[in-house]
Length: 233
Image (tube, rainbow, N blue to C red; front, side):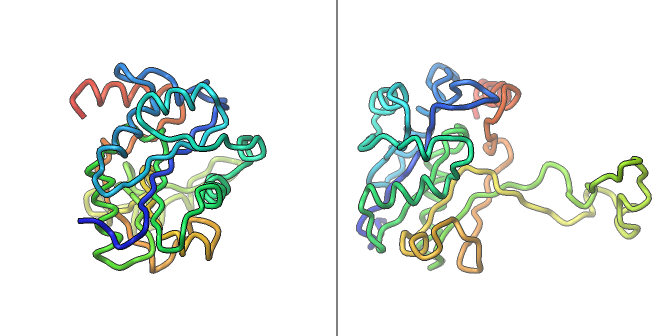
């Protein structure tokens, strides 16, 4: 199945700067640079026409090309500092790639190496069969947010848990889901309208399992991804 859209483009944002895990996009994970796992997942998705890496780094550019991605532009420094948002990078790519309103853009962050081509394919299939404007990946929360709260300065817990929740078992609580950062598939027409990954009733969730939802932000996340890959994930 292919879309009526002119192009389905996978965009992988990968800047050089990373304070918590230095140079993380090129760190070797199970024998490959971290970014390579996302590039290969995108290339193996039959619904994707082009795999583009947006980066400010020549080193990342060379590795991306080595693993089969295209790097048609170098991201400007104004979109590579800590305060630049992913949506800024996304809109810049839409302009540089001259994407049409009929196109589809799939944002794939390289920090989600356990997301597979099947996961991407599921999201894109849902985008067209449900006739929505976007599909975003989520996973079930590891712990119910109903058992979470802020604490006052004195640390007392009088209002920490609502009384009707305090006596319930965890298995009796409703399932909550969180964004896992792995897949954002949107119609370009919607992105051009809102200039960001806007959430509305026109956006639908695709549910991924927790063991494929590791989002690498620090060394502990990286070690967890290594362990899961060693277990065949």
